[in-house]
Amino acid sequence: MKQKILALILALAAGLSLSACGKPAAAGPVKIATKPMTEQYILGEMLGLILEDAGFQVEITKGIGGGTNNIHPAMEKGEFDLYPEYTSSGWVMVLDHEAVGVDDQEMLAKLKSEYQEKFQMTWVGLYGFNNTFAVAVREETAQQYGLTTTSDLAKVAGELNFGGNPDYIERADGFALLADTYGLAFKSVNDIDIGLKYQALRNGDIDVTNAFTTDAQLGNASAGLVTLEDDLHLQVNYFCSTVVRQDALEKHPGLEQALMKMDGLLSDGEMAHLNYLVEVEGADEKAVARDFLVEKGVLKG
Image 1 (cartoon, helix red, strand yellow):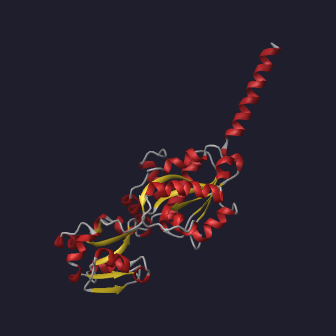
Image 2 (cartoon, rainbow, N blue to C red):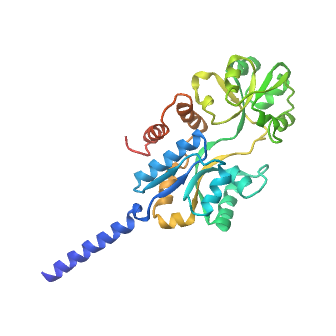
Image 3 (cartoon, rainbow, N blue to C red):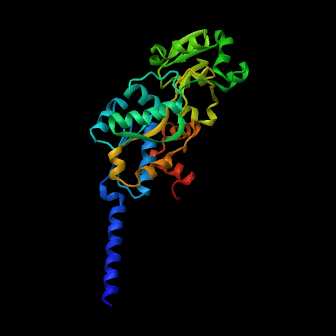
């Protein structure tokens, strides 16, 4: 009888020990940071919801001014455990490398190794979408001139008006590089505020503009806008992933497995649509994130 009681006590003690060790919340909250943009707010909420569903406590700090320039140093200091980052941003802004001509797989492998060596951080998974520069036109313009690639623009650019936000037109790797690479000589080139360029495009004030592949306006199916293929592969890729401190992975068992639920989850179009729901239709980013995760089967409804 005493042996049975002793065995029961030991079993209960073992169970309590395993429970305490396996409970992610015991290590305190996982601290998530995001950049000051709609897309990052949504991604931060997705990460938070996934981690909470896995049993972790979560603390999200949204909209860190300066983005990578301020979040990365804060990560080094241990103020945050993880944040959504873009491959070429880390490659250029943190590691100070040139992004042009680097294979995506090679870049990711080196990002992981150099972040581990220099900062004791790593990159976990790729969300699937690529938020990079693109060229956008109205659907009717694409049909009228047979435009599917950016190279197609060369033969008709003289009949079209380009409008872009001033920083894109002025930066060395922006409009000048685009025009030089593709041989584009537009009828006119116009500076247009970033918040007005899509309206100007829809109104016919301009015919072509610079875009990002996950812009909210491109996520509106009824807007009638088309992005042209970067067939000369001018633009470097900005695939999104999670940068996480190594000590956070060690402190929170199961964190990496939970973060991998974001791997391959989002296409460019899906991310653009979610941005549209929040930025244009005014939906709550957490609700949008939750609905998407439920739709994808990552969370239960």
